[in-house]
Length: 170
Image (cartoon, rainbow, N blue to C red; front, top):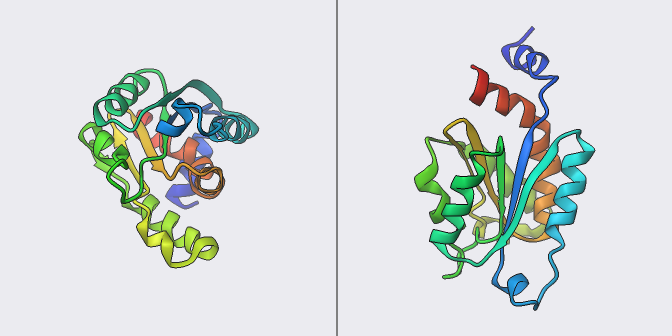
């Protein structure tokens, strides 16, 4: 049996605790409905995991960083949605990187590759990002429901137990 299969087998009984953070000035101002949180809850619970904490914060480095740092004390995986683009207000990656101990560049690479199928060359403008932060993991995705669904279904949820096993128990 391959090491990956062994690890996944050893991790099969893990229930992963997720924290979900939406970074959006427009949701806070009431200009847009938060469609990400209900979707993330549904997808995460559908795989037998728990959503421990959710939040919506403005696109401010200090606010995002503080929320994520506190969430890492409560959750195995922190999902930050929004703020991963190239505009001036997109600061989620800058907010979380000081908390990281190991980067997971494959997440961003695969996310952009998968996104390319749906949105074409605009996928290269995404700064989707992931890292290990202490004994947890942080994922930063674009804030659209489609992007969150892609990230969760195709990448994060299939490896969540394996990732948590590696970070917490190995």
